[in-house]
Length: 300
Image (tube, rainbow, N blue to C red; front, side, top):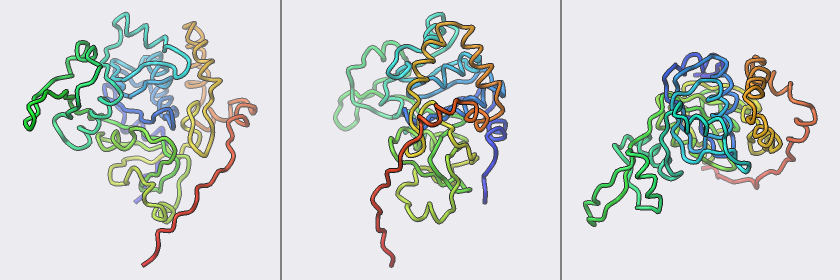
């Protein structure tokens, strides 16, 4: 059974105004193409959840898509503050809940496993408990020691970019593994974007690399270069120059609007976006092949 569809159709079908959306990926394989498509389709009042909002959520906030942000750490990685998000958090126009990285993952794990909460050892982040009433403390029934608990996070939609998957949605990831699996299992609907669609036999040849199984996937979208300006291991490098440029763009609201007009609203899809990038940029982001050693699974 194929779940292949266009990214435009997947967003139109599964992302609705007011939804909680989780765009997964930790520094690696951030689904920018899906974020841009959500902007193009004019979604509003979204709750955007993500361990590190990164540039993609700032673009969505700037475009007026978001009502609330659920996050751990807000920043332009390696550069500095996300100015637009910070301004809206400070002036009260964007609702927010802040967590540590670990407690965000704990929330997803609780959502993925159907638990009412997830316990954690007490940490040094006591200020987060003061700022966020979602942190609670309960007594461990075995030791009597207090533990910190957080509630489940169950997004309406999780969006995950992967290196390859088959037409049914069995998806494989290598390189840095973030919270993709937890977000996918916790969500009501899952949209995959992928660099490659491969035959089922390719997936079956290396089953341990399959992070997301088909039975939880709703839509499979073949979208090469979907994570630019972040990177996809083995396919293209991180565009560090753009992360620096975005910092300069956000100094001026007019430049932010001009960027969205040209690079989001002004292109119809990711292929048009990628071809619009200068040839020098596309060449700079190319990576050399570095194959892993083969694994012998044996045959019985």
